[in-house]
Image 1 (tube, helix red, strand yellow):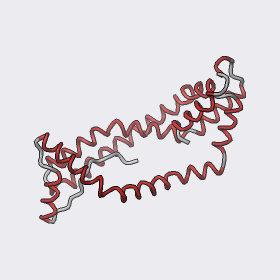
Image 2 (cartoon, rainbow, N blue to C red):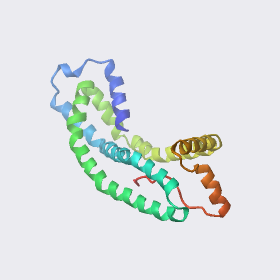
Image 3 (cartoon, rainbow, N blue to C red):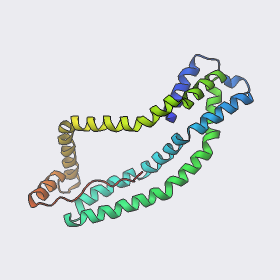
Image 4 (tube, rainbow, N blue to C red):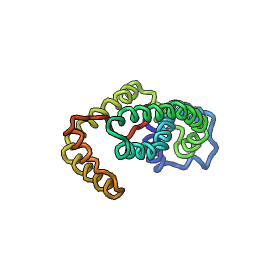
Length: 204
């Protein structure tokens, strides 16, 4: 369960109950909160990874635009590989640092929210769900299900989306005074050249 889903569910459950913030948390309740936060380690790590990816997303987009407009076709693939390597180097350096800090901050940040908004009985229910073997198998299956849905969605909507995307690229290129990407692609196709293009993104 992702952090967003966990706390959305927590808020919904807590809406109909008595606010636990009005009374001191019992040791048993604190122990339940601690276990729940520990079980969310992968979600905390994903938050940190997502933050690292967001920090370089604008730069990746700019690099892709410059690669398309300013680099000679015969050099683009090599330059793209070099840029990709730099993004990976950044990710390998920054992601562990962010994850380390996120894991340190999580108990003091997330724990009080759980203590205030969920009763001890509700915390037990959440913990039972997180520790359920069936739920763990479901979580393991989630990436595969997401991948399958994404592939089918892309395949089914490509004919509708790609022309609009190309039109947007052409419009932006004209506004910037750059060669139209679709025209450049057509010229490459006519000449038989097919370099790999696209904005480099950090590898996970």
